Image (tube, rainbow, N blue to C red; front, side, top):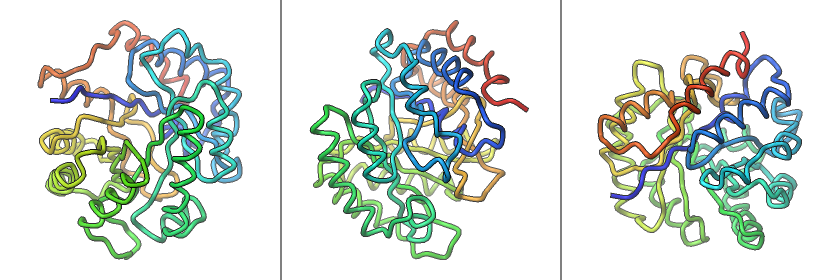
Length: 286
């Protein structure tokens, strides 16, 4: 069994948050999360400030993080185009550079203003830039379980796209249930097939769910063989471009509880986790 990786996602929790969160508060909260010992901290994005104004201070935030003191945690940022990619690979705090590639043509255009063909071609640049700078590319397959737009969807396409991305040199793929449409059965079947068909890739999940659905989806991914889980403390956040307010990120607390039952929880600093949770009202003000 491969080691479990927990990816904490305050960036996804913040990006659509309606109240502006100050740079100071972001730095305080992210620093607290660094102390917990997560595998990866999804900390920001280099994207258009017009599209995602909450992320316009990402470079400033990263510059103030004591990331060197916590080398077990790699910082990840999201990019949507070459300009963002250049900013990401130039920043010393960044270890992972993520890019959202959608299985829905409509959502790809909404999210990155690219066609699917353009987006897949951009992955070549993602791989080239990250390899040249010592970073690691991560591709998120958004709308990975279907979409609300009526665009064609076939689970087999997850395998086809995954194989093409692996051939391009992408080592990590995260299958995203962007609008929370996946049933636990779909999570299991799609992931299981993908892991078996493209085993060279490390497959993860970035699931959105209503609170009552979270555990079933976590368990389905686990039983399919997934060992990489994106989540956010308190279950905050979700994609601002998806337009579905009733689903959110998987609560990190639910993922931790599940992994404790399985006796598979990676070592985390419990007191640091409690301290980070205490900052949630500041990080996500009412």
